[in-house]
Length: 519
Ligand code: FAD
Ligand code: SF4
Image (cartoon, rainbow, N blue to C red; front, top):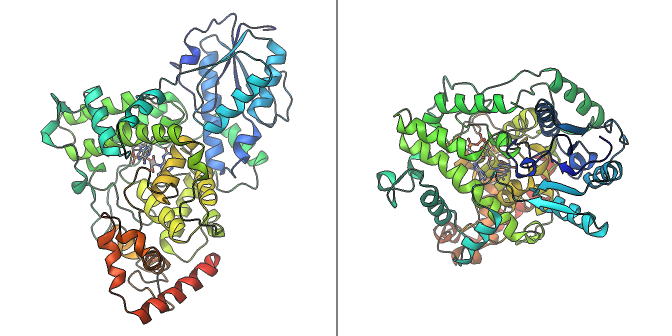
């Protein structure tokens, strides 16, 4: 096509056929533009599994558009498409070239998920007087405007209030205006650890061997991002809508029943456990959150799964996921700049390799680099709180999270890191910093057995760094924690420590912090 009416720009996390951007497409007059650009894999040091997941899902999606007789101008990394320059650096470069080529009346797209990209594209359109139309992203169940309106009514933003509003609004697991079985929350039933022998007979997650498209992506990622972290040997993520639906069905049929009970549990060499592993498919929109919720609730209605499992799961998808997105758009760009504790240390080098003597970190980071996946508690209570207690600069740790997970897009990564894991935003939507000693990790996993460090030891050569830094955090932030009703009980423990022990603790912590790379 020489000239076109609409140039429809589809980003890597907008792979839904029912996207508002495609709503009024005219196959003989419009062109869909998709592009793999370097900047999106280099603005953070994107791990190979993450880049491969996005490129493969995008290439498959382009094929499904072509199957509908739509014209797709797809610019693969290093190839630049039929007409393009092989060296496109950014989305703006690609767009400028395509505008030059097709001279469209309008650029149409769904609103980007990332603040950075929305800014870039709007600035470009404004400075070049281009008619750029961003349509609301209908994938989400709560729009940005609806969330902002909801937030106006609250002094403090709390998931629980939002979640209840959403349950009522969509009438999910409700009995009139009240929650089914009279309770909103089954968290207490959802904190189980595995028995001594560990998990057994966990139904496997769906793994899809690479087809020709994925195989070609793997070759391209190895070639263009050779020095990036992570490996592709185990790459087997679902990258089409059909496979994402199969993954969802497998989870609901086989693992959802135990999801709640073992939601927080961890075990060495068990990367997947009872979780759903659908976050990446959801975030690129191969799956719709409504259908995910319907599938889970139907299993409860049929008596196949207990209420605590389905409530725990619905809370994540309808509650946390939508809440996190709302807060992101409300608080950007301040959220990215926030540094409540003024932390400024470098991220330990082993976050990028897994090469550490701390078993919990080695296992969590190891599976992260191998699969691009770790579950919520590993992200929050292992790599997350360590980053906080080790006083790592927020941007360092935020960039790591955005780089290493296949499901990482900034609207969901940043609030989880800045808001939940490292309290960089000073408790905008959490009531206290999440911190824990090695004892918590011992209780929830088998990581500590055989570790060079001892979880109950805070000082001396076998002291567990998590434990030392936990006590040091209490020591350093005693005043602030004591004055917080949700943290004061925990903080009072430090007041029971003798003055000499506190001095020794500070010395141990200073030694630990001065050489984090050596742990
Ligand atoms: P499950 O445990 O099976 O949960 C079901 C679904 O609920 C997930 O697929 C996800 O869509 C949603 N969900 C669960 N918890 C959250 C949450 N806290 N915020 C938003 N959605 C949630 N999730 C991402 O999708 N991308 C990220 O980049 C990301 N970064 C995170 C960083 C940190 C520090 C923390 C603590 C959490 C992060 N999360 C992120 C949230 C959560 O850890 C992942 O969504 C989850 O581990 C994905 O695995 P799963 O699909 O097996 O999820
Ligand atoms: Fe992690 Fe400490 Fe347990 Fe070792 S002893 S696995 S460092 S919590």
